[in-house]
Image (cartoon, rainbow, N blue to C red; front, side):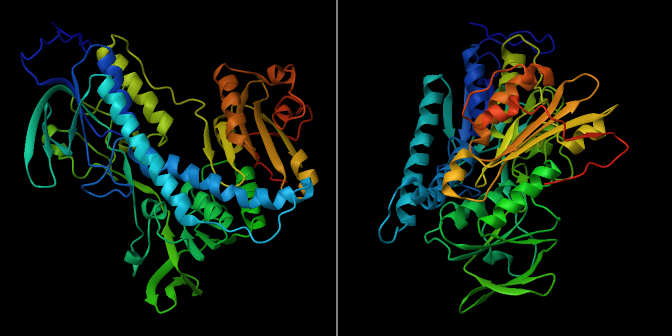
Length: 494
């Protein structure tokens, strides 16, 4: 029976006539699994290769589910949950809870339960693929040509498979800073599987991972020093919200070192000696490099198929995720577009619909929401104030709300929730929304739907709030905080 292949007018290819598979996927992370499943649902014969499972990745270790499920979003969120209880215990006292004696934290128990969960999820992903009729092959895939994949086993054996189309979904990996003693540092992979909870952690980086691990380890009682090159953490986010996050980190007891880099690490009897570029020295038992990620493309032999990459190794693709080789496609972090799991899922779904579903569908990168799971979390959707000013043809209106959550009014925790809306003054359309405070990701996910539908500020104002809730503040911000023109600089008053 012929299978439907509707790309560039190509005729369908009958089973076994020319290729082993209609689609061969390299990498069984979020994007690869979604792409293979949806392609199979359209009737394609699909195979996928992935490395053997292990919580810490290497050249020969990976697992079904990829970075997000095994050594990223999921285990990180589990640790965030664990770290959050420290603050809950503190806050509970004014709600009448009397805790007598010490409250002890068992890191090994949490680690064991985290590992059990990712092992379970690895199995879930395998069952999902099997139930979808996708052939699973264990090993490392690389290209022989534009229609052939070679899968290598750790024992050195190799097997080749041909396919009408190849999808690359190999993700990215943590990178290390090239300084003396860099081998003494760990990345997020190892941080999620440490045998012992650090007493004093030094973190280099100012992005998602750095801020989240600072919150996790501090929440579990560790002393944490966070070093980053910029004035504020979370470059690329709204400047006003970055200030809020920095203040919250300090309020939770994390020591911030803005404008500071690490220059050298060395092993001592007391731990790891850390020297900064300002000449400061301190001793830590763990140093985490959270300094970005690199696309996993160097072992794919891309040049054999004429697949082009950019200067950092990201695979170049067009708006449909097609590479410079017409039969080879790529989605997710290996393309370095928007490096978020839900975006990889979107790209993979669009790929399958385009190639096997008879629909020409492009990923839509407008109004993609995201969250930083600091404690408390930050979540945003749409444009920051700075981005809105760069794109605006006219003035923008900024509405903000800073308030003490009801829970904090009893617990006496000095930590405000901050919300912000950025609005186009001419059209009244809401261009961006952000929130830092408890449940921010859950609230912003709903706001994202509104922005995707083109909501105006009037739409927000006419919406009835849920009382009492933090979320209702988004529909009661009637007072303008400031009006900003593209020729002026936004002022931060938080």
